[in-house]
Length: 142
Image 1 (spheres, helix red, strand yellow):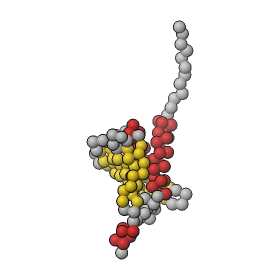
Image 2: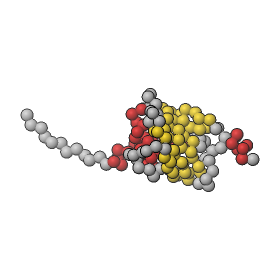
Image 3: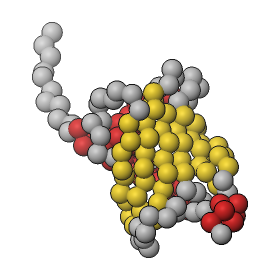
Image 4: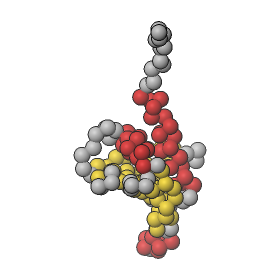
């Protein structure tokens, strides 16, 4: 019995990360669409919970499968200028991104927990103001 060697295509690291980069961009875009100024990705046994900060309160927005969490952490870390494959304790990265109408910056904090790396993101507009302030936060400014 003879087997022919089949030449398999070489897949680059970028091609492997592309779907996760798209997921990262979707999470950020959805936060802005909902007037959120914060995002949390909390790992758990059943999956990663995605929360958006709306009107000063955290609200669950989505649940990602648990096996995707490490890859999602990698793309957020890479976007924040941190080494994607290595982490050691609490770290902060700065993510810059744009929409059709404005530019934004997001500070992403990576915090180790027993279940995995928790990500907390705070979004700011180009002027350095939070992307959205709740009515209570607006009152505190005056």
